[in-house]
Length: 215
Ligand SMILES: C[S@@+](CC[C@H](N)C(=O)[O-])C[C@H]1O[C@@H](n2cnc3c(N)ncnc32)[C@H](O)[C@@H]1O
Image (cartoon, rainbow, N blue to C red):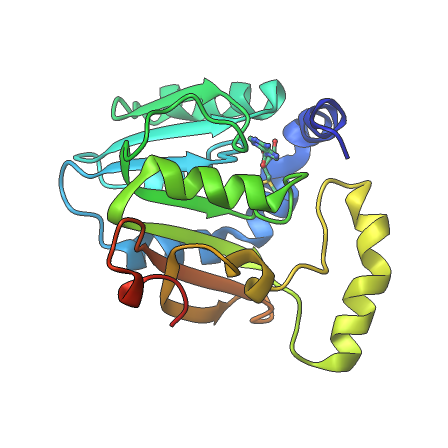
């Protein structure tokens, strides 16, 4: 799906998102932010921020920037910022696969249910790594394809259909991390049904080659 179509798909979801997808996955968003243990004054980038459901969960003494492609989603997120008086949060409309930020701009980059929603996950991961400082954290909350052969086959079968709805189901964490400088520090399965993964990585870019990449 190209960026224009994707923008339209998510803008169409915006009015029902919080009551549907948003609500079902809220518990895992809460776990993700809680486990981050954000320190005061850390700079956080949330890519594909959507309607901003996680924004009120961050401590008020950190700075949060949310980006998204969809105007409809961003309008909802802006309303949430105003309702909760989140003066530590700003939003920008931007393609997460081609960001305007300078290298090493953030301490933490969060992608909640985004890695399988973008047209090109390699561009996304490469950009998240670029804008995150060396030693910073990159967190992905997402469904990744299952190790179980039967389920993995089902995921492959339904993926083309899901793509019309704005996401894919056949992407493995292995493929996402392959060739990157991301080192998995923590991985756990989260609700609903423990089918979704919370993966916290350390950005080892610029580190000595012996400390880069795979675990
Ligand atoms: C499934 S929603 C997740 C929203 C939010 N993170 C959450 O937890 O509810 C995926 C979001 O990613 C956004 N998105 C998809 N591709 C994008 C891209 N290339 N750049 C920026 N945002 C993108 C969509 O517009 C949508 O808001």
